[in-house]
Image (tube, rainbow, N blue to C red):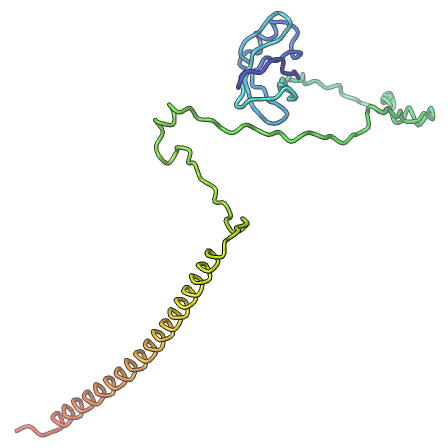
Length: 231
């Protein structure tokens, strides 16, 4: 079933041309409806006697939206059978293609049945607005944050006077000297680190050699003491 909005007030809309009477609306109260753009809603109550009704939606819809209601219902089919004992006494029903082929009829070509490209405008939904009273009760992480966008100052054209140009040149030269000094300082620190690393490696190697020599001497003396005869 399809209908069209008649009046729209925030998230509420009055839809008509879906039902023919208020009795039909009463039978579908509480039914789920949906727009072509994907906004879900619900049938609330009849409005007038011509089948119009009031419905609420998740978001504000537009007058160009089409509201539809899925009214499919499962109908159980009775199970029966008619046994056929012999195919000689049965005349099978011919299909439409067989009849057209026998009578040499062409397939009807209706212009309304041809597929046409569907063009739909992109829907632009309104941003979510939270009342100030509700925002005050929300925790900080759930409150909407106002992020200020940074403007690109480099893209602005700045007209400087002669004094400003001299000041800018002087500041640029000072910054250049500071960068050069920082670079030299970093090179010096890196060189000192390399020298210190090499010195520490040499000291560690010398200490390892001393420990090995001391251990070797200790075990040699212990071996000699074990081999010596005891009184």
